[in-house]
Length: 155
Image (cartoon, rainbow, N blue to C red):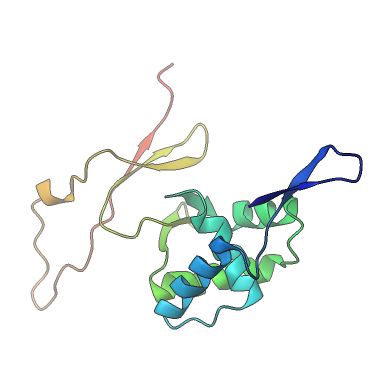
């Protein structure tokens, strides 16, 4: 992100170089590593996702961020791109309450808390899945364990 200056000498809104900036180059390499063509839309969305470390976001949150930055992205493009990123292993899809899906940029094994009062998903400090004594049904193997603990304010 680069800071631009308006003609009046006051700081203008931050501008992003989605074509030649360092973040764009890193994102394009990340997309190519999972065999996704680095289109402008994918680079823009991936830049939003990966600019600030591990994140838990919904497609609507990503779309709102893109609109705030005046990125020319449709809601459908955001949804489709996030699904492509999940299929490629760049993000992890976490389904909560029917149609609400969160996208987690931390794809390794870990557990979550969901704050019902604030509609926020966040990581547990420790991965407790290894403490669970799970056995797969005959002829099956366990490929993953998702633990989501719902929390609310203690009133």
